[in-house]
Image (cartoon, rainbow, N blue to C red):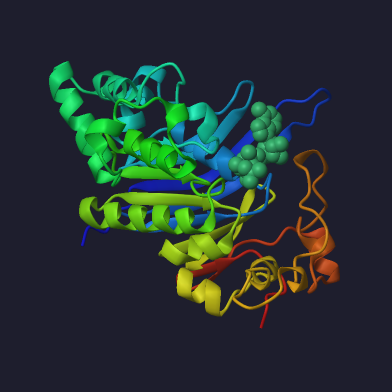
Length: 322
Ligand SMILES: Nc1ncnc2c1ncn2[C@@H]1O[C@H](COP(=O)(O)OP(=O)(O)OP(=O)(O)O)[C@@H](O)[C@H]1O
Ligand SMILES: [Mg+2]
């Protein structure tokens, strides 16, 4: 087995300047690694920094944001890399399916034109060969009747089919790192399951490393080898999926797990976590989860916890779930 990571993030911080002297700290030290053939699930409520983490990896932090820390891709530092070098890595090395599928496809070009253009941007091959690769990509994402569908325009596709096309678009240049930002949120439950199955099947063929972003820990845990939980711009717990599910250590993770709908249980009766996630302009002192935490102690209000390690599992909490 290849035991070097595909991506290695260390202390990644992203901030935006604000009027006054205090900047907005959106990511506050994100650390994780990804591995060939493995899926890391990145979970958290809205605003926790999931998309910003993905944008950091892609070198696409919106202006005037700035990034500190280290993001290595196959041992090569990406933070500070020039735009033309980054352009080569995007698509060929690391690919992303963005959160909002409605804006990701251009309404005036058909699927074939968009796939071919993506291929030709990254590969020096003839348009004919690119056409063949485009069709193969549609086959890979199991679109029925691909020879016909390739001539469709985005508005002719259902939500699930559009998502498959976007995944095909991300795969055409054979990246070894694929980031999927909420790939199933807009889809109904059956189509969600089909897309997750598809992602797993593709990965089993090409040994790609995947980051699967979702606010839904239930969905993520179905196909992830490891789960990382984000809260207020930081990963507060990470470990092998089975450990996280069976023995969460952070009270926030325990709360998220309680809110997974179970068959036969009325949705209204689920124990959701009280309160709302904090805004970066107004993070509480100490542990940012403390105002919502059932295990809160005096220390939690004053000091942000460090990462505590327990073999492959880590958690940032002074008073873990026992
Ligand atoms: N261009 C920007 N300038 C300043 N702050 C931003 C900008 N873009 C995002 N943010 C802030 O960064 C924080 C993290 O946002 P991000 O989009 O990463 O959250 P998320 O976890 O992906 O949420 P969601 O589940 O809603 O997609 C939020 O507080 C957001 O308001
Ligand atoms: Mg997001």
